[in-house]
Length: 307
Image 1 (cartoon, helix red, strand yellow):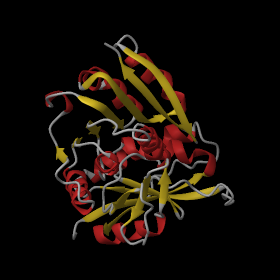
Image 2 (cartoon, helix red, strand yellow):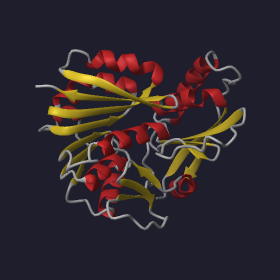
Image 3 (cartoon, one colour):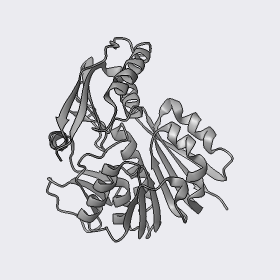
Image 4 (tube, helix red, strand yellow):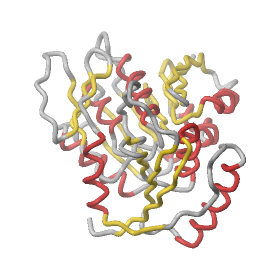
């Protein structure tokens, strides 16, 4: 990995971290860290750790992004955010170029072994773990692919997905929209799904997702594509979309079209205040729900498709 990615550092009041992270993701950030905390992982921060008044946010952008356009967009977003977040200075940060391998290595300090539900265990590749007989152990090597903007979004999806496999074999056909590192797709295969399709518009994400599927021995059950959602064929018993609220709303018709009758739709990447935007977009589409899960500033909506 010899690419020189773009890194920006922004000093942000602690109360405004989630909102700034959301805006950086919308601008195309492929990953974000805050101080010594990673926001694009399933790792839940320790609630007992005292958070300072200001934190340093580091956002990483792919090397092919137009730097001049990024500077202009940053100026617009930060000026707007300063009207919402007391103490945020709308100063456009310096953009630095860093090697991809430097970023990838820095993520290692943010990952630890996590148990999701009674069976699923997520283990970073550099951590040792002795599984219990019922464990489905997902060994994750995230590389450069993240893309949700918050640890809570992926965690909420994993919890909703794992519940479907608590008793019995569970769903066999799963679609993961915006697969990123492939964590949701690989988790579904490890839990028992036999046909899992991950789709993502980013080539790096697709490559990392396939690598993670191979590392976990589920490459026979996991396929990854860059094809647009509307061109995919067939339907699925579970459709996962850990993307932003606006994208969930925009893709509402296609997400429902890909869902089999009786299937479960799991939507995440949704800020609490944008729940209604997504609910309105899926209203009247033959779904029951939503069952709403929340963590920190984020929401996950779960629907089931009727006959």
